[in-house]
Structures are given as C-alpha cells and as structure tokens.
Amino acid sequence: MENRDHIDTTLNHLFRQESGKMVAVLIKIFGTENIEMAEDVVQDALVSALETWKFRGIPDNPKAWLYRTARNKAIDIIRRKKHSKTIDFSDPQKQLLTSGYTLKTTMNNFWEEHQIQDDFLGMMYACCHPDISQENQITFILKSLCGFSTKEVAKSFLTSEDTISKRLYRTKEYFRKHKIRPEIPNKSAIVPRTEAVLSAIYLMFNEGYNSTNADQLIRKDLIGQAMLLCRSLLSVERTKLPEVYALMALMCFHAARVDSRVTTEGSLVLLSKQDRTKWDIALIQSGQDYLNRASFGDRLTMYHLEAAIAYEHCQAKYYVDTDWNKILEYYDLLLDIANDPIVFLNRSLVILELKGPKEALKVLDKLKNNKLLENYYVYHATLGEVYYRLSDPTLSKVHYEKALQLTQSKWEQQFLKDKIDSKR
View 1 (cartoon, rainbow, N blue to C red):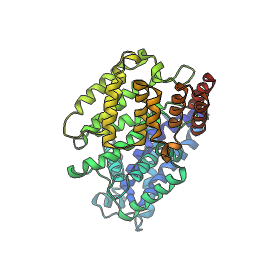
View 2 (cartoon, one colour):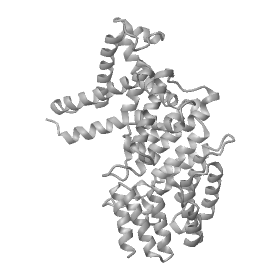
View 3 (cartoon, rainbow, N blue to C red):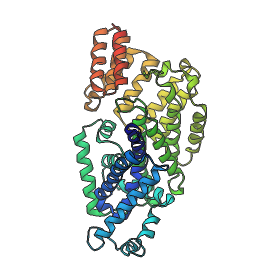
C-alpha cells in the first residue's frame, strides 16, 4: 500500500500544476456558465486519485492518469446532459460531442497538449473581461485557475477570506449570465486585458516568494508556475508585450536570490546579510536579457521599474555597493505611475539607507492613517526598525510586537521574535 504522505504530496503538487489547466479545458467544453461543473469534475478526479492510488500505488504518469480521469468524467456528464439545456451544444465543435460516434474522438481533441495551453491562456484572458473589476479578475484567476486557497488569495489582497468568497461568487455569476468565450483577445484589447493577467501572475509569484504556508517560507512550485505562465505568454506573438518581458525579468532577479533568503535551519535572512555567492548568476543573466528585450515600445510600466530596482540589488557585489540613489529615482518614477502605499512604504526603506531614521520617519508619518497598511506586518516591522535606530526601544518593541501579531508565517514570527530579543 502506497504511503499516504507521499500520495498527498504528489497530489498537492499536481493540483498546483494541473488543476487550472483542467478547469480551463472543462470550461471550454461545458461553457463559462458551468464553471462550478468544471471545478467539480477536477475535484472528483483528485478524490478518485486519492482513493485509487492508496491501494494501487501512484501510476508511472500521474498527470496523464489525472487528465484521463477528468476526461472520462466529462464524457459521462456529456452523455447524461446531451438532451438537456444545461450545456450549449450549438458550437460546431461541441455538436460532435452529442454523437456517440464522435464523442470520444472530439473529447480527446480538447485534451491535446497545445490545445490545453491555448485554453488556459484563453481562460486567463476571459477572466480579465473589462466588465469584471480587476480585483475580481485576479481573485478568480488565482483561486480557480491557479489552485490557490481562499486564505492565500486573501493574504495577496490584504483582505478577509469572506471578502474573497463574495468576489468569487460575483465573478461566477457574471460568467454564468454572459457566457464569455475563453480566447486570447485581439490586438486592440490585448494591452488592458494583459495588465490583469500579469497582476495575477505576479501575485502568484509573490505567494511563492513569501508564502502564507505555515511550514514553508518559500514555495518554489509557485515561483516556477508563475514563471512558466509568463513564459507561455511570451510564446504567443500577440502577448509578447514589453511589460510581459519586464515581469519575466523581475521574477528572474528575485528567483535568483531565493536560496540565500533562508538559513539551513529555515530562518529568514535579510538582503543585507545574504550570502551573494548563493545567487543564481544564470538567472540574473536571463533577467538582464529579458529586461533588455522589454525596452521596445513607448510604455514604461511598474514592471520595468521594479525590475530595474531588482537589477540594482543583483548587480551590487556587496550590500554596501548598492546604488541607493538610483533605486530612489526608480521608486519616485513608480509613485508617478501609481500612488501605491506599499510602494511608498518600500521607498521609506531606501530613505532609511540614504538619509537615516529621522528622514525615514517623516516619510512614514504620511502613512499613519492608511487602513491598508495598518494591518500589514511589514509596515509595523519597518517602524520597529526605524524607532530602534532612533534609540527608542519602547516604541520599537510596540511595533515589532504588532508585526508579530499580524503575520501567520512561523518563519516571519521567529524573525520578529529574534528582533525583539536582540533589541532589549
């Protein structure tokens, strides 16, 4: 009998890697008005895998097994519902699903590898319909197509799980009512729709880079998935946009530093203390190549500037070599593009390095009543460090303890506890 932990690990990995693709294919078959039907088939396939593999063992090709199971369950549904109005079979390709002679062959065509990737990207863009708010677009992509839990999506948005559940419901209702066709948009609509797609990819990457998972600070599976999805966009001519190259560069620069972010015991390591010999030079070079290729066109996006900031950190041989003045220029340009409080917060850390804690505190005072940051642990951790450098251990401890309450990551909690203990 197969070890249950090994089965769970394998299935969890498959769920992250493949569930979104299966959902996208099944939505293509059932229609966007039947999203929950598609999600149920994927869940049923996963349950079947868990029940079967614990007795027969994990198959040689678990991905193919899962796809085949989902396909067979979809065939069963088509047979049961071909005379009902639940599924719209008016599309010429779907009409072939209603005949017993062509059902299996037509169904197999939906599960061809190239078709799966196209459907996945098409569904990503369908999620980014202009009539759906951007926060709902990204929420739906992360939850239904990228395998995120409601808790993980909530952290990405710095909001509650209840809010995320309501967003998902509203988005599904919109799909159900309007029956949006999953496809990559035409040239005139590609830029605004890609903005939401890239936001989802970047949030996915950030969840991998700094995970909500209690047992893992870094989740390389999510990092890899985000980078793979971004590369998929670069494999399609219509989606080879400057901002896509820029985001790919940004993720390369950050991913290059992953192995230096934690000690062998799993403790968090600040950028200033990281062993730069562990940085992945090949990934940094790839990031430079992508950033160079992002320079065409007339749009300067947040991804260009964030990638430029990340490059400055990567190209500094030692922390003291960091060009903080250039980084500050990039942050100022970022604030011109979007007056984001988190960008403003990150900029304050540059001020701390360049001009000291007094000037940094002046900057942070402008964020005092920001409700978004009030529940963001990094904001309070930053204030804790600033007050420590101002020789105010009382206020420093207050903010470090507040930060400690706001993060659920045991690695971040331990890091903050060490900070509090070291500053007594």
